[in-house]
Length: 60
Image (tube, rainbow, N blue to C red; front, side, top):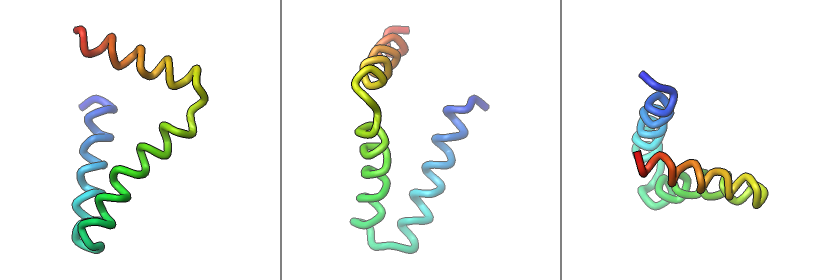
């Protein structure tokens, strides 16, 4: 199993646990807010590199 697959499985598991313990809107806010906050902490050159890498992988 690749590292990205492990991360995805872990994210789904955390999301399901949050849905059980928190109201659905709070879990949704956390699940969407954490990656958005992480992206916003990157400096502009890192954001450009990240966008360029994801575009290359889409073209495969």
